[in-house]
Structures are given as structure tokens and as C-alpha cells.
Image 1 (cartoon, rainbow, N blue to C red):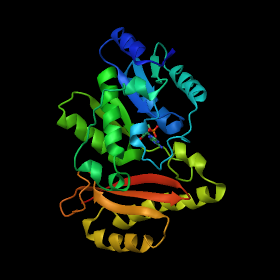
Image 2 (tube, rainbow, N blue to C red):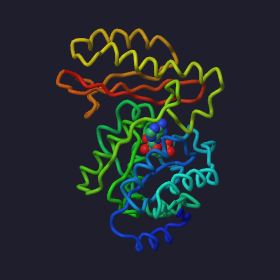
Image 3 (spheres, rainbow, N blue to C red):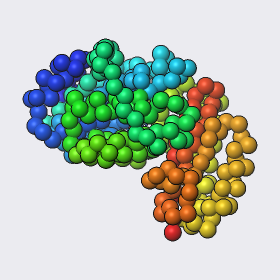
Image 4 (spheres, rainbow, N blue to C red):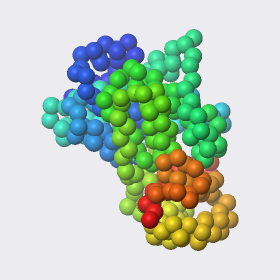
Length: 284
Ligand code: AMP
């Protein structure tokens, strides 16, 4: 069963009716198989799953795509229904606030920032972005009080920021990171892919093939880091890269000397569309 809730008052009321242990999937809607993989994982673990659909103004910069971000609630609900029906006796509560004030009441201001992790790489390119993410996720956690919350590794830095937030605030919520869902040729699914022209979409395949190439060149060996860095430096001559970097997979430090796992993080730009992807590689 799927229930749609559009006000915070109803959400609080609804939450009172449920047993303590629920799963939670926060999204901005315009759902695709990546989002649905989070929902279905949550449904395998919990009878009741809360699923939020909220285009959070706080995580968009002044020149970003907040106004044109695709809002497709009707279709999103159909996809949620389809998934939920595969799990007999399960219930999904969709919280899609009718306006941002439901989430951030006027006059009540607070901002949450995870220092350090929020200001590097993607955070450097999008000042304020991770504050917006941490603030909305914490607010939703407070309202929904989940046992576990599900995030995609597609937004790897976001996943680390949320995990750090939970640790620093000594919250018992468990953060589950789910694998990136890709199209057959490798492009990571994203609501922003629909902004791409057919030519841009074709060129975007270069992103995944570059991540794979780096992973193959590394071959899990620390000794190969130098060769790979040379390859990345050469690759960066392609102006489509906003950035392409190797970082420690836990701390995002650029000092890899003690790293056991690294992450390769990039943004490949097509027109005004920033495509974000990453890959993790264990080192020996
Ligand atoms: P968004 O609606 O873009 O804010 O994403 C909501 C959640 O879905 C986040 O935890 C994302 O990391 C996750 N997500 C988005 N795209 C994918 C994907 N291709 N594979 C797995 N998870 C994804």
C-alpha cells in the first residue's frame, strides 16, 4: 500500500501510528531505477518504508537548476506502487511536501554543516551545497526517525558527509550505501540525464570508460598511483572535465600514502549539465 502525505503535520501524525523500526529513502523525485533500487532494498528489510520526494532549495546554488529540476510526482507514485506491490503486506509512506515551508518553517532557521568534508571537491565547486544537503537530511531524520536510511553511492561525497554527520551527532541511524545503477553502456542513471542531447549523451559515455580505464591502470596496486596520476593529468586536457581526482575513499584526503581504498571522483560537463560519477578501488 502506498500513502501520499503532503504536510508535515500529517507526517508527524502518521509516524505515530507506526512501529519504531522503519526504513527511509530521501530523494528529490523524478524517479529512475537508481532510486527504486534504494526503495526495494529498504522494502526487503522493513515492512514500512518512508520515502521523501522533495526538491530541496537549500542545496541548489543561485545559478543552478532548481526551477527547471524535473518534478514528476504522478509518475513517481506509479513507480513506487509497482515496486511496493512486489512486497506483500508492505507499506510505503510517500512524503512529498506541498511547499518548502513544510520542511523549513518560516522563521525557524538553522543550518547544519559537516566541516571539512563539505568544502572539498564537489563542495568547492558548489559552495553551500552540502550544508543544504546535511540540513534537509537532518530535518527529515528528526521528523521520520528511521532505523536505517538508504543513499546511493552515485553521490559518494554526499554519502560520506551524511555518515560523518550521523557519527558527529551520535545518532543511532544506520546509513546504507547502495551501488550505482547504470545504463547498459555505463552512464550512471541521473534525473539530469534528460537534459542531454543525443550527442551529449554519446559523449558522456567517455566518463564511465575513463573511470574503468583508471581502475584497470591502477590494478589495485599503490605502485601504479603515479602512472594513473599522469594519465589523469593528460585526460584533464579535455575541457569537459570540471574535475577528475583520486582521493582517499574514507577521508577524501589527497594524501594517498596510507590509503587502503581510493575513490576516483569526477564531474564531466555537457553543455550546462554537470554529470557526477565515481568509482572505488581497493589498494594493496
Ligand atoms: P536524488 O533524487 O538525485 O537526490 O537522489 C536520491 C538518492 O538516490 C541519493 O541517495 C542518490 O545517491 C541516489 N541515486 C541517484 N542516482 C542513483 C543511481 N544511478 N544509482 C544509485 N543510487 C542513485
